[in-house]
Length: 361
Ligand SMILES: Cc1cc2nc3c(=O)[nH]c(=O)nc-3n(C[C@H](O)[C@H](O)[C@H](O)COP(=O)(O)OP(=O)(O)OC[C@H]3O[C@@H](n4cnc5c(N)ncnc54)[C@H](O)[C@@H]3O)c2cc1C
Image (cartoon, rainbow, N blue to C red; front, side, top):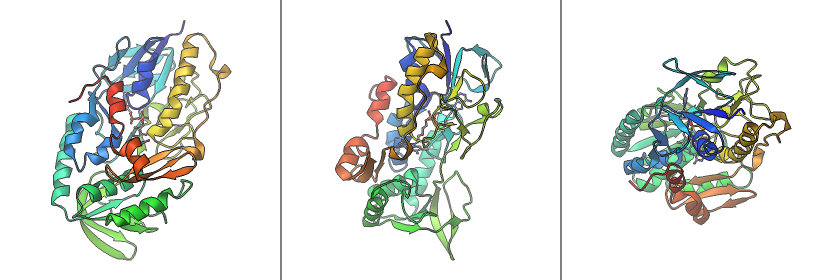
């Protein structure tokens, strides 16, 4: 039977998938980082560095039967995976879940967890001594960061800048308006419908000047928050791949990114019609688990039900610090209490620490 599954990348797709399949297949997880990086808590960690001890979670207890290889994969083909030292790992099924990179100090550069800690300390110190702060980009990361700073450090002058005319323009209901009202109440200045030009770095917070419309404005600290970039290098050389946006690779209805029938791609790297979110992985995971379990039992992939993405109905939870925020859930916009209970208080830390069998630090 074709039981060997190799998963490349142990993020929100790879780690839970490896855990859930390790008892029914021969599972290998290839992941170069020593720690799982819990991104929702990395935003608050900018104002509270002590959170890092809970948000960076060691991988060493994740798997019992499965094998964890602490290495970077450098190649994929129909027979298996090549690691950076040239080692081959043979596979019947391969899941590429290499995710994406983002700005500092939210995700590490490659596998450098010590570097991420150092970046967090440095940027936290810069933030403490800054009076004027700009955040460029008002997606979930930029909006949450504005709320976290305004809530933990109310003496700072925070400006949130977006080229879009409203916050979360693609989300139904009144999520964007509710969040904008709360941010203004917290003292955040919103500049919407105007592009900020002149960022000295797209990934590293820095002091400097921005051209905002007709004006030039100086800030003690500017956070670029302009989105994730998919880590798709492994997929680029596969036959008949198609790029979508942000470096992602489009997948077919069975999450295959190329004409190789046994290579799947999920999460941020594979564009199956979902956004680049953990919420998307929560819908993809049950499908992947079911499908891979059937495949190792001998089923043919085309006989399996295709994956259906969230489309416009994906929930989104946006805390503005531990107490406040808004969420879009199915058809309604929820307020502070629901957002706090569902995300703001714990930031899903307990869930992912449980997955990785980590105790309290
Ligand atoms: C600051 C921040 C906050 C966020 N908050 C939220 C939130 O609250 N809710 C939400 O829904 N989404 C949130 N997101 C988005 C979410 O983090 C991503 O959608 C999610 O991480 C995608 O999971 P993934 O498994 O595809 O990839 P990732 O989590 O990026 O994991 C990919 C893994 O692959 C590994 N890898 C990469 N290349 C290789 C290679 N060549 N060989 C082996 N391993 C490799 C990496 O080391 C990494 O561990 C946030 C993102 C950021 C940046």
